[in-house]
Image (cartoon, rainbow, N blue to C red; front, side):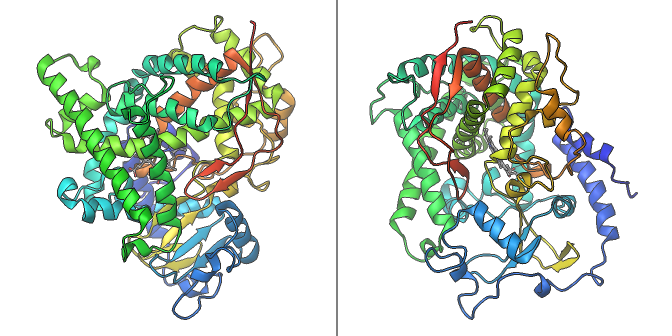
Length: 543
Ligand code: HEM
């Protein structure tokens, strides 16, 4: 039975209480319809997609070599912009040695086509280095399991089905509000001591944010506090070693993924460092998870509502710890930098938009009359302006510059035939900043996400003028997807949103935020991140 895809169907996808499997079934129904509509014969040949012409042997490799190629000295966002300006909204980059062909898409209607056709086993061809490490270098330890980040096909599906309910159900995420608030309260105290004589944060404040996000992720990944926020951590302490490992993971992966993959042929220093970092994560994750198993054995059975996410995963795998420790590692790899950067971006935008910060402060004061009040799930749901600020911050500064799907069979996108094993790169970060899709795109306007016109009563939130300026804009729902979409979307979405919401509410409730060093510059490789020292000025509020 072919179902008609409507806006209402899409809204159903977005309902938080719908389980992922329901959403997946709905996607399948839509997929059937789209596939039936598509005519392969009527579509234009793959070779006709505009794009730079490949050279013999090196293909398009030279285009991206710094100092040599047209796109070599640009960050990823600038590359996207240049490709779109030169070739249009669908661009083919072919024959880069060691890489799949890529088709860049700069229009949400193409994103929609891709996601609606992604099928039961969405393919995301990233982190070749992690695949190689898990499937070849340490094959004995992983026994063919790639985990979520790099698993594919049936094997990924089985893993995702096991970990999805414990990690995505709102009722389970909500169990972590209290412990994450406790971690955040400690962080707020630490911030007070980190401030210099001008009340500014140190240059490497990002490192402090990463300690906070690592400490928070450990609550869900390992069921324990690591102690990352302790002052003066010894270099050989476990938390300090984990902080360094999280840093090394990102820097090695960026080098291994973004440059020519010579590590596949010879063992380069970066590859060796990557393996050492991964081995450390494996060792520490199995140690912590075995400790949790031991605790569970000693404690015996307990009621369902008391079980943590990790305990649920362990019970669903009959106490086989392998899934739990691979999942824990994926959380460390995907959840530390992303959440820290996201929080910094929100801080920056609020600092640069004092009127918006003031609206938020007024909202926070209503929900948290005392600065140390506890935050509840209901509050996080009801603080509409906070939610709008965080949404708007992810629009302006998306963490990942693109969503990606690999084609698992021949398909038609944008009326072109696309063969199997091509990476479709959906440039959602660039599109999110295009005037064509979001009016006043470069302005921080949380009001664009509010359902109702802000009033000027005691309960006002946001600026009515800004709301009116954007109210008629109804963006394609596939345009704004900072956490991806469908069965393969970010499994940490709820946790990440909750962590950031708690941190930003505590920060803005306690301090006035400023940033007095001009415009922040950003770099984008694997993730889009700020480059300048994060010298936020934090002045304690008196009320
Ligand atoms: C602001 C923070 C974050 C952002 C913007 C973000 C974004 C993303 C995106 C865009 C994807 C790809 C989705 C797709 O292909 O459709 C993804 C996947 C993933 N993320 Fe996140 N993420 C964040 C935080 C987290 C956190 C805190 C965790 C862990 C608790 C996490 C774990 C993962 C995992 C394991 C995947 C792979 C899922 C799969 O393929 O089945 N992320 N994330």
